[in-house]
Length: 246
Length: 141
Image (tube, one colour):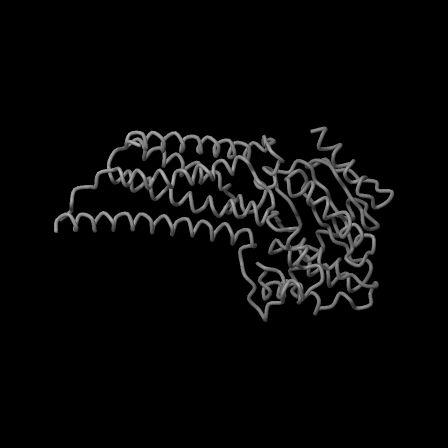
């Protein structure tokens, strides 16, 4: 009897230790996974499957696990910065985003070598403004690059209504970790004008008059990147030169 | 393996993993390049959101856990064995999660992280072996 009581007591102690271990590790894993998903969950309306919005599934996969902070994409410690001035309706911006940016993300951003900043412009028309407000609202939840990339995947003719509220809403619903209620409230509210004004001021101070325009360099030492054609090798060459010089 | 041998093994493996974690912490805060072998996925993994817990790198937690594990090896008795078992199991479960994230989500392997993860799994086994070898505490009844 004495032996079995001792045995039971020991088993209980071991079980308690195991329970504590499992709970602690589960909490840590949950915190890590939640952080990687953006820290919140979709809360309004029915979720839209990523496969139902053109480009959403690929974009989610491409950006998975890469830190975003406001309009920044990439690790804060990255030594080289690339600033992209773009209009969401501009065809060459679309070409850059769909043909060059994915490679830059895989080769430079994901490994933590380069951090990219999106500075939006809306000079093409009201659709640009609607998209820009959506991008800015997503930036508040660190999902700007998802929205921008998916919008480019769905780009249509300028000012023909492709960049609709419905498209923006569907993109939001397809993004894991985006609070859609908060997103809608932000993009339709007055506070969003502040970020758009900041982007406009940045473009003005940098003398940007057309899109896409690029600036590249190290923190605080950015210079205009003269691109003669949207060619991946030009970007690789410019980035490698700065990375190797550090 | 004797109890003394198991405790020594726990200490050695935990300190080895603590050394790896300390290296990753140093690289994170210094912003320097990470030495990577076998393909070079270290930067990708270390710069991912999965390597962070809020603003703190996971390697800081790993360092603390492995040092605590090493400390349990320095003490005799069931309490130290239980603490070592619980810590080992915790880091072991997290290690499995991190291996899955590297392989299935990030599609990149950080050899430092992988080495630390494998050690964590070894520490789970050693924790169980130590519990079996350690004499039970006196019966409370």
